[in-house]
Image 1 (tube, one colour):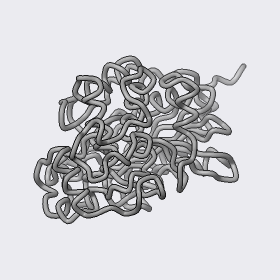
Image 2 (cartoon, helix red, strand yellow):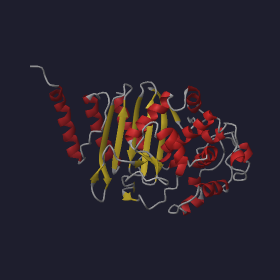
Image 3 (cartoon, one colour):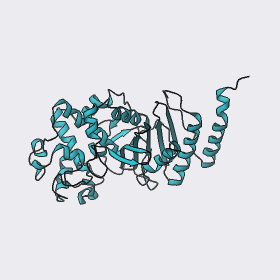
Length: 361
């Protein structure tokens, strides 16, 4: 009698259950619409690796997604979404994604450039007169590339003193430029969250719409990213509870990070997003090539570009109040890994590393 496929998978499932039960982790829910069948042996290895990583890294919880080049997907989760209620993380849970938001902010601006509403050589002074000293020397391209010289508002004394209060984009920029310039515009590279606040402001002026409306109409709705939204402007439903070293802080700090880090999403939506963006479906070949050209320190336009022996990784990391995120595609294989963690002190990249180690064996 031919051996049933489900019987062949039983040893892997049993091994996984033993590992998860020993670690006190929940068995992940299967995600809907899995697409092509994911290799069950690989799935078992990923489940075990993520469960171990969550415990070893001390993350309250983690949701991880993997998409292979053939489109097959695996979803895993380990730990708790809420330590107070002992609620397990599910693969469908929503997390703050921090600076992974910048992939959306850059893409929205680049689409307006394609449409002719914004130009790379437009200056901050053109769009926001008098807001930034020497704004006539700082172009939209410099903002996208982090070559503007404007200090990041997350490094300002104002930010530290007002973590619990709502703050407007204009105040964010004013407090950033008050700290002084880091270098002459365009002459060096320095990561600055303020650059992407300015891009959000310019996008709104160029489009005549709120930034989240631009993102929704041009990016999220066309790709059916139904679990992705801007937290300060929309209510897309409950999110998991965020932590700082195991202490719950979800509502303790204001979420005014806006276009530099204010989006909420899921592993499923993020993998769909990166696949569409990296394939050229969102921007087209010319703008995508420009987005993925290194402008300094391994950064393109809203995307990190990281070389490794196995190939180049393209994507972004993120950290925000109570959360960490990581989203990258390995260009040589087309594999995507995204990790969402509900603790500010546990990098999503460290969780992703466990998945990449399994995939790259």
